[in-house]
Image (cartoon, rainbow, N blue to C red; front, side, top):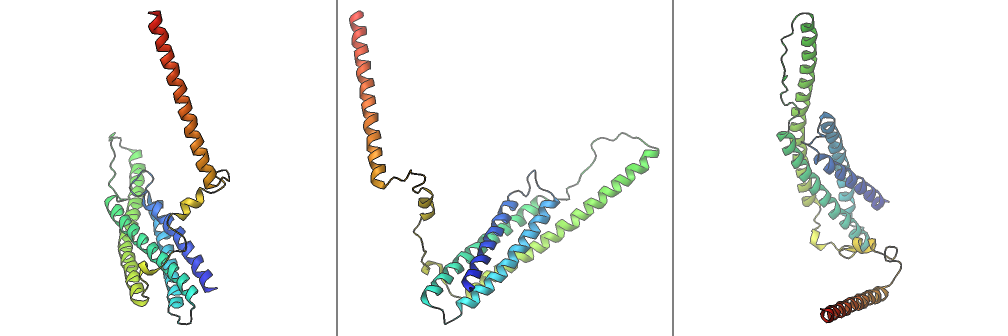
Length: 235
């Protein structure tokens, strides 16, 4: 049950980290806005909560001396996958910090046209500018506060990675994968995509295609030679 729980937590963390990665890629683009920054903040907080819970569950499991060999090997694989996920999360958080600092939400906006209109409309314009200024102030406060919080979150994730290495010693190069390298790619090109043919059948089909191509090329070459001879006789 503990293993299934850790797998479910790790799966949720992977999805949240992937979502955060895609959101970070839009910072500074045409879709950037305060709504995006707020969504980044919520996704980052959710990823951190999942990371803390997953780390606690895996640490307790791996420090249990009563684990069997197969169970320990499975938890070690989950631990390595969790470590890689944290590394990606920390890298994306650092990238978000750089982009958010470079593309600030409270860039100054000034009117391009001054009509010089005065009178009754001046009060309306003043109230509109005042409301806009309040909105910019709110954006500025959120932007600055989120950058400071993001810096603290990066330190927290880095500290978590360091504590993981100190509490549980699971070198990544000692953990054996359950599948061979490239198994996902090979599984995607399975019998359904190959029409259910075996390797020998596909090889035979390839040889037949080569023979057909050679035959067609020979026929075209003979036709060209015959045409050249006819042209020579007619001339």
